[in-house]
Amino acid sequence: MRTVKATAAAVTVALAAGAASVAAGRYASDAALKAPPGRPLPTEPRLTVHSTAAGQVTLTRDLASLRPGTYGLGGDGTHAVVGPVLDGAAHSVDTVVRRLERVTHGTPRSGDRVWFTPNLHLGDPRTALGLDYAEVAFPGELGPLPAWFVPGSRDLWVITVHGLGATREHPLNVMEFLHRQQLPVLNLAYRGDPGAPASPDGLHHLGETEWRDLDAAIRYAVRHGAEQVVLYGWSTGATMALRAAAHSALRDRVAGLVLDSPVLSWEATLRALAAARRTPAALLPLAVRAAQGRTGLHGDRITQAAHPDRLRVPTLLVHGPGDTIAPWDLSRRLARRRQDLVTLHQVPDAPHAAMWNRAPADYEEKLRRFLTPLM
Image 1 (cartoon, rainbow, N blue to C red):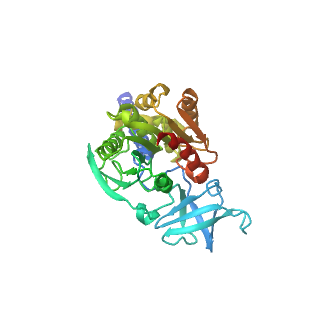
Image 2 (cartoon, rainbow, N blue to C red):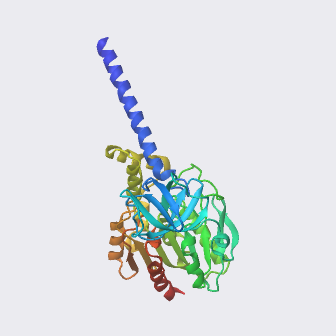
Image 3 (cartoon, helix red, strand yellow):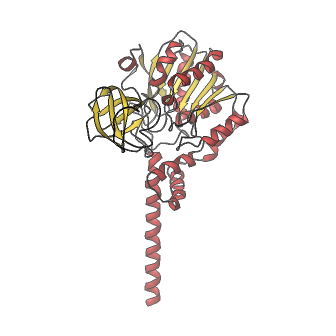
């Protein structure tokens, strides 16, 4: 009897441990699969506003607050734009002072918890940039998909698609530049975004199913006068661009790709986000398996879409070794394998999907050189 009880107790403990492991794996995978649009990813540290003054803001000293470039400064109910570090400004050893370019929403106050974001703008193209635009919608497989359309005189359209944890406000960073090139721009909201249909399971699929919404955007563009399109994606939006360029029935209309911080391995990205949630290393494989079980993700599909032999069009790849979410080495390997088609612009000291923020003028010049032969 004692043996039977001991065995039953051991089985109960094992089942409980297994259930706990499954639950831990699901929780860890949520960092990627349930990343809310417009909220910071777990890799982005929370900072404290220590003080504000005319044209400057004092923040917690951190690698994030010391980044070179121009960024949005998000908070709960606030948003501002900060420029470079002001080295000559008085500050304590544990703070840093940056130029406060403008406050776009709310009022940052001492004690507020804030984070850096690539998004400089809030609102739509007209309210944020003064650009005329139309709010359009077109059918997707889950329902109508909204998009902002900024007109231009050329028959080459640019379709922009944001990535993980962002919204269609992120591509507004480059909207003025694209408008100056007289390029029509279709800025897509896809499944899971505000105003777009929800994913049936309520989860992100890291581009593996979302690319079909980008395919619907290509069809809309061609029906409304686009002779060719450039697919311009950030993060998982770049993954979607690769999938669409490889599998869309209209892939012959794709003239080029712009891939900013592309997610070329969903497993690596999921592990990075789960680790940022302080998931123990031993549980990271469980997070990957949980994501596979919940979404049907298969690494080989993204790998195939990003395989060097699958590229057919000129591609601008913008990435850097400071990206802790999407491995830089995979981008470098892709560029090395297809030097005939891929132009790699390396950006140092920039976090995921913030390559433009590091040096906007340099970024836009590389973009201009890439787009000009396609126009």
